[in-house]
Length: 138
Image (cartoon, rainbow, N blue to C red; front, side):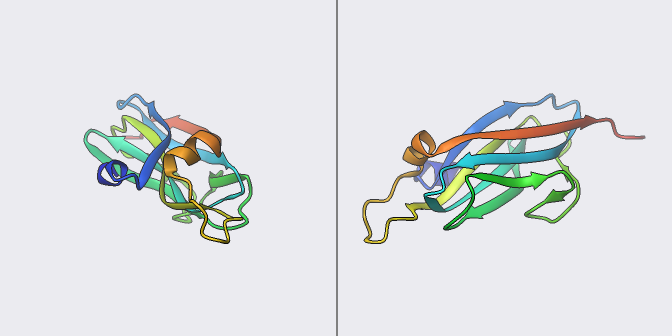
């Protein structure tokens, strides 16, 4: 992600949201609001622990997507189809990232495409993230 970010191929939409690494978390739900005219990008929730990052969920936003998009709903992660979306042990935080080549759905004549930074500023309208904290049984 660092390389893509430096090349303008990825942008942090939201976060980082810091977490207490001594606690364990799962994602109950995660959704975002993106203008329906945007297409051609992927958005994903990533967790980081120390110098490492892991993708928790992601979704490609194609033509005709809803303005409110869910990556995870209670009981289902739409990327992995798992019922529980665990964050890794010692997770320091989470971040929402967009990557790809954004375009406008009405852009039929190869007009100028938006950059990811422009998309973040004008077409991204926030996210809702619900985490559950739990203790592991020993």
